[in-house]
Image 1 (cartoon, rainbow over the protein chains, first blue to last red):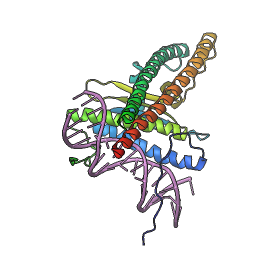
Image 2 (cartoon, helix red, strand yellow):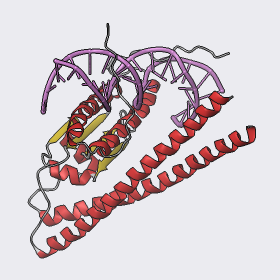
Image 3 (cartoon, each protein chain N blue to C red):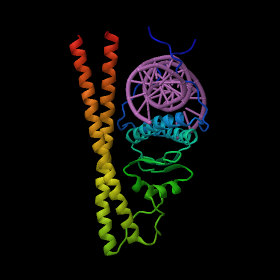
Image 4 (spheres, each protein chain N blue to C red):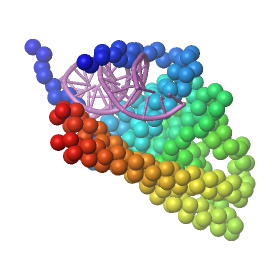
Length: 134
Length: 134
DNA sequence: ACCGCTATCGTTAGCAC
DNA sequence: TGTGCTAACGATAGCGG
C-alpha cells in the first residue's frame, strides 16, 4: 500500500527563519538556478555570468560563466579592467560606472512605479467589473 | 465550447534553430531566470550578481545584483577597495556612500518587484474568482 | 513584436532514511 | 549533513489574438 505523503506547500518569498531549512533550500535552489542558467546559455546562445555568495558566516562563493565570468564582467563594464595597482584611477573609473548604475537603477524604479500603477488600476478595474456585473 | 490545445512539449536543451522562437524563448526564460535569482536572494539571504547578454547582433545586456553587481564582482575578484592616500580615501568614502545608496535603491527595486508580484497575483486570483463564479 | 491562456513539463518542500 | 522520493507548485511551449 503506497504511503500517502503531504507533498510540498506554497512558500512565501520572504527571508526564511529556520536556519537548517535555509541551508537545504539554499543548496537545492542554487542547483536549480545554475541549471536554468546553463540551459539559457545553450538554448538561446546567450552569454551569462552569475556569482552567488552563500548567506551567513560561511560566505562561500559559487560562480558560472559562459564564456567566462571575467570576460563578461569586463564587457559589462564596457572597458578592460584597469591595472589593479593604480588605485586612484581604478576608483575613479568605478565611480563613473557607479554613477551610470545609479542612473539606471533610478530609471528602473521609475519604470516599476509606472508598471505598478498600471497593475493597480488593472486590479481595480477588474473589481469594478465584478461589482457592476454582480 | 473550450477548444482543446496541445499544450507544451518536451524540448531538448540544444541551440534553438528557429530565430523567432529563440527570441521569444529568450525573453520568457530570461524573465524566469531573474525571478528565480531574486527569489533566491530573498529566501536565503544570498548575495547574487547576474549579467546576461542577449544572443545575436543586438547583444543587449541585462543585469541584476544584490547588493550590486559591482560590489559582488569586486569581492569575487578578491580585492576590497581601500586605498590609503588622501585622494584615494576621499574617493573611498564617496564610494562607500554610493554603495549605501545602491543598496537602498536595490532594496527599493526588490520591494517593488515583490509588491508588483503580489498585485499581479491579486489580479489573477480575482480573475479566477470571476471565472468560477460566472 | 507582445500578451494571455493552459496543458504539460520541470522544480522543489516536506519527509523518510 | 546528504541522498532519494513524490505530491504539489511553478515555469513555459505552443497557440490564438
